[in-house]
Amino acid sequence: LEQMTGRLRNHIINAKKQMKIDISENPSDFNFDIAIQGSAEEKKLRKNLALKLLASKNAIIIIAKNPDVCGGILVAFDDNRAYMLHSWQKEVVPRGTISALIFDAVNWVFAHSLCQFDFEGSVLQSIDYFFSGFNGDIIPYGHLFWSKNKEGLYNLINKSMNISGRLII
Image (cartoon, rainbow, N blue to C red; front, side):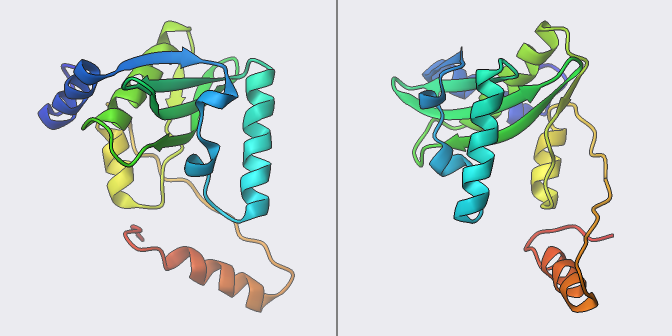
């Protein structure tokens, strides 16, 4: 906590005073309907992947209770790294709920001898900066587009560039 900005630190402290954070492997503790965005088919595929990861003990759920479950983060992991796949929170929660969940997820990862926590980033600059507040580095990565024809390729590229708040360099 000491190396974080005062604002982020205060959000985490505030949330932890008002709720309890637990580790769960129970899929019913995670609101997939809120957490997963996309088409119906994309949601189904992502939920099935998350359920398989939980069933194979390659994922955990960090949940916030106030007193009922009001938010959660799904973290998948392999032998070395953890990946924040999905997160959700109810509309009305204590200030700092997601920050406290992320903080505890990162601590869980390092307590279990994993060497890296991947926030999975965002195309939105403000979200990447929020994640970097947890003493993480923003690491740009390439993205490949493939289409059977040029028109489809140009549509994919244009769609990816037309996201509000996206940082284009």
